[in-house]
Image (tube, rainbow, N blue to C red; front, top):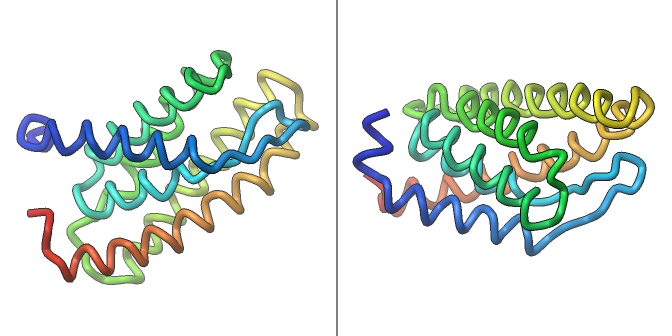
Length: 162
């Protein structure tokens, strides 16, 4: 967790930026009593640039903060665990500049998130709601993967984060 000590201010800013990005674009999903947002863009970008522990911190804290700020307290614990795990998995092999490797770990992280929210939604609201959550979460992750891959390509070329 050396990244936390060395990049504490950067992680705090990325967490705030990720939370604001997600707050800016919110699409409620009445069937699941939840919402779709752009949280994955911040989580995946951070994870690919700074690694799994950074992705876990930004994902967990921003996911929990988002639920708190939007009035979804029943989701906070689930979001911290699911988005934290998602960020960690997305950044597991962040040192790789190989596009296929990055995509593989983004897909693994996305599956973790979709399955995690399926179980969380099923636990809170029943299996029908859990199944209903799958499509929105797949769309949210696919969009987050595409945008974050583009952002990381640009940021890698700029060599801003060392």
